Image (cartoon, rainbow, N blue to C red; front, top):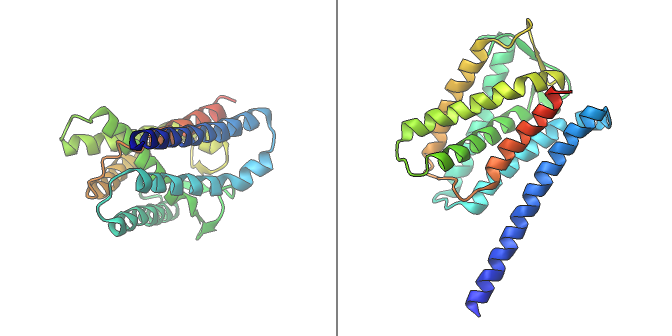
Length: 229
């Protein structure tokens, strides 16, 4: 009886996971299709920032729901710190040009505070957790912390490299000059390493949170669809 209940519980969890994956890809791919067909442009722009915030919150919650977290308060504190710190760094960066280079935000990503979208912090945390999850999957048999942190930073930087052309097309932000400066990617790598280091102190493997890699990949599919219009 207990074994049957356990099997039923596992089937229910698998069904729930499949539904989440389906909805994730459906929403983002349909967003790409709408852009390709020039449909619902105003609606897409209206919800863009809120969708990014939602993806960030979902990423954090999925880890909470699926992983063994020893100190919940510490986990909430560190993920909140990364959201706030990354937003603050973007605030400094967009106003000084010192960190990422000279760029400015458009009016698409709302709400904004001091001219910087609040959603940016949530974009950083979802990218971090997705990159961390993929790294853990690749190096699941390795205990080399530095190598893992370097690869998390690499996957975060790769995400930004592939996202930039699409984000510019979408009007999220724009750069002075024709090309995204190398400085931006160096900053992403260093900040990615820093945030990965901060998160690694939680000692959460992310091996059980399978949705994270789909969050990472589905967003890249969306950006590819935008870029190739």
